[in-house]
Length: 403
Image 1 (spheres, rainbow, N blue to C red):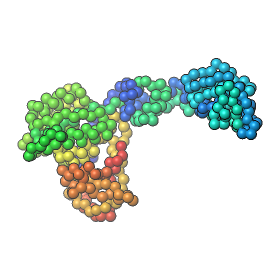
Image 2 (image 1 turned 135 degrees about the horizontal axis):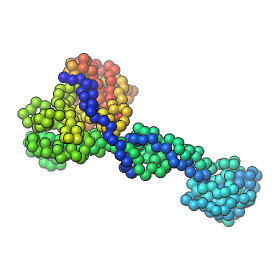
Image 3 (image 1 turned 30 degrees about the vertical axis):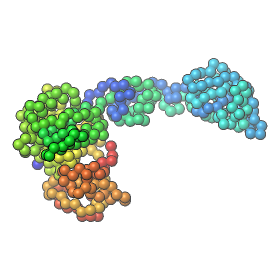
């Protein structure tokens, strides 16, 4: 059997960062920048008011108080998006809204709260310093300044700066397109009635959701019955549609393990056993002339999810161009005793309690225990040489709440 780390390395070998493409800004969220972005203009690009009020000459208001207001003549009214052609001179003011360009001659803005709000003349009840409430051109970003470096993950805040510097198109590594194929004649679509011996297809929904959470554009194909011709045709149909194919089920030693039978015959997919619990049977390789990566996962839901976390999520992050492929690990105190098979790395589902304690979830750690998986927030990692953990013992934990 291969170790978890050795198998992960073999999965990632031959998988690279997706080639950069140019996308509209509206489609770039969640992608990784493939080139530095510099601002072609300063931010702000012009001096403007940071308040609703009046553009004034500060020296006119040195004596203004509530008891003795200073009266100024209002010579113009400027909303945001417009520029006044008037010049502020001694004794005059221009009413101005937030974001409007500062008019010539003015060196400060007095907030409307310090005035009577007049439109012909205005009574100002307080002085202001020169430059008060004025946003200067370039005080945030100067022209030519690097605003986002290559390799930046584009989130909401990054979208904002890209828009501010005029990037209608963005050069990025795109989200991987992931096709998820679940196999098994026992599977039916959720919501349909179940006959004895049949189960709802949860794996494909699980894997699509997990792939989306990892940053991919994922979609379901199937479920596919255990038919070799149909499965091969389905895989061939997806080769031109996606960057990665995931399958679940059909990779063990059963008589009807279609996935293993079909893909083994292609000669480009390797099946092996990995020293982990759950999720021992695994497979990966490439299909088609385009050599699209394919990762085959076991059919038990928990095994499929644990395998995804260990092997597929890192592959998706690698394809996206992200540097950290694995979730961070931390230490915590185990709140209950656990056993673990010797020679296998166990990934036990758990939830966090207060004060750095994790408690195993569910009725056990079996690969079918969906309830325990649904309530899990973490995976307790028990090394291969350890056969048991006592309550109160410090353990290594993968935090599933992280992105």
